[in-house]
Every structure is written in structure tokens, then in C-alpha cells.
Length: 180
Image 1 (tube, one colour):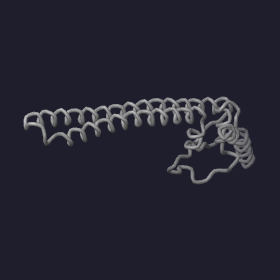
Image 2 (tube, rainbow, N blue to C red):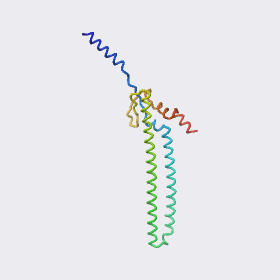
Image 3 (cartoon, one colour):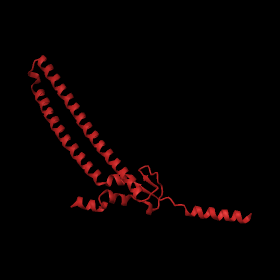
Image 4 (cartoon, rainbow, N blue to C red):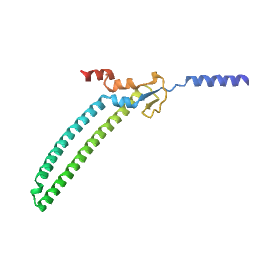
């Protein structure tokens, strides 16, 4: 009977040793997304677009201010009805400028958010494919809320994934090209 228990224990131990261990890793999500070349290009594009729109709107606001100052210079010589008519016209223009400003800023915000969401989706899909291709059971995401408090450095896949995402370029090479 002791031999059977011993044999069963040995068999159980050998069987458990033959099972595959799960391959895991983790990725700093924030770094991968922010250092991804496509994200940098998108951010530059939307920052440039935002600056262009702001400049256009500032120019319109300056023109409006000039018109208001012109009115203030001549308003005393106008009749009460003409003054009231001009003031209503100026208020309507001011409201139109405010609506245009809100609409254009909202357009930029929505456009940039759609593009950023698309890029984040692309990164997630890439990491999933990377995990399957390289035999990972799990790849955890380390975020700003630090859901991974500790991980062996050899399990950190951030730089490897970034390198593949950026077409073989490391972050340092990307930064060097930008400075040149």
C-alpha cells in the first residue's frame, strides 16, 4: 500500500513538472502610446490645426474689436434708434463669433479624440498579436494608476513592443531624428 501511495505521489509530481509554465509580461501602456510614432504625428497634427484655428479666430476677434471701437467713436452722433440697431448688430456678431469659436474647438477636440482612440485601438491589437506570436499567456498593462506594483525587468516588454510598433526604431533614434 505504501508503494502505491509513493508511486502515485511521484507520478503526480512528475506530471505537474511537465506542465507548461505560463509566459507573462507587462507593458507600460502610457509610454507605449505616447512614444508610438503615429501618436506623436497625430499630436503634432492636431496641435498645429488648433494653433491655426486659434489664429484665425483671434484675427476675427480683433476685427470685431476694431468695429466696436469705431462704433464707440461715433455713437454719440447717432440717433437713439440707429444706436440701438447698431448695438443689436454688434451683439449678434459677437454671439456668432462665440458660436464659431465653440464649434471649431469642438470639431478639433472630436477629431483628435477619434484619431487618438483609433491609435490606442491599434496599439492594443498590436500587443495582442505580439503576445500570441511570442507565446505569452498574459501581457499585463501598467498604467498611471500603477496596477503593477512590481515586475521583474526581464518581463517588461515596453521597449520591445515600442521598437516593433515604430518599425524597428528605438525611442532614442526617434528623438534623435526629431532634433536634427
